[in-house]
Image 1: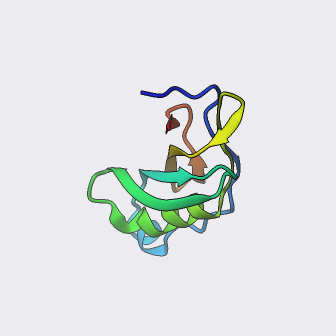
Image 2: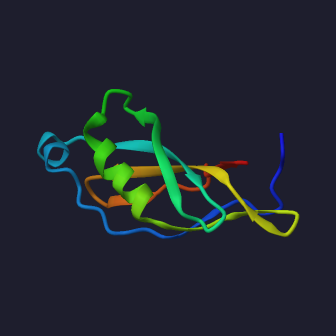
Length: 109
């Protein structure tokens, strides 16, 4: 495994509109979206890697949009920006809308 000198990080996240079907049904949950960040911090290839609850697919579209529209700082290895995977945990709460759930951000080169 190649460790990074500095893992990628999230710069900013766009606002999220809570999925109406989830709001009406009273559903809350967490979605973990994995993206590949390039050397400029651009996200590609979003993949849902986990949901809590596991069958709460109602949040997938909103979570993927958030992951793709967020801004990122790329990972650094040997002083140079490198491609790296980043897993972004997003929590959907009826009381709080959405928020990034830290710290389980996971990065891998």
